[in-house]
Length: 227
Image (cartoon, rainbow, N blue to C red; front, side, top):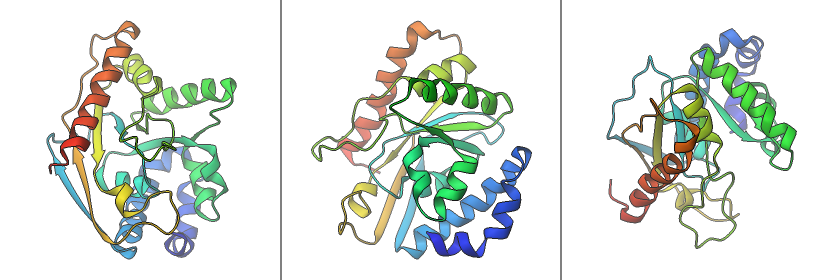
């Protein structure tokens, strides 16, 4: 993870110095993700139920079980997007330096931080950048949980800005590279991009149903494990 960042450091540093250069940084980040995935022995396989419109803003959501989720999301999606992620990842050497410069960080124990996240996410959506949130809010501590309950944030933002939800299911990430040390193995990593879920005309009163529907799409795919 660190070696390609170190090699690309001057370019990444320049591209993260101004917000308007984020689309160019995103291209570099996708290149980095491919190096990390293939270099670690993972072989991404992506199947699309829906053609992603590269000129459209989305709220990308996926299940979260692995340290490789960020890299696979970057591999799957060509639309420039910004991650909303936990601030703890900013402590990772080298990676954390660019993570905090390009992502919207949230302190899950701070109400003020959560409010700031919405303000920053709204600003990025207004300039046409998509947002990516792992709506479980973290990795379930209970290994028996296939998919934890979803938080409201992604769905509130999607409704506020009337942008579609695009669910993505990562089928193998937990098996390949989980948060449990000394686990995992090289191999295929499957990602399934589902049909978009529209939010046009929805209000915050529809937020719960939107959250339940989205979670159901991902959960059904995880249970069937069909690709």
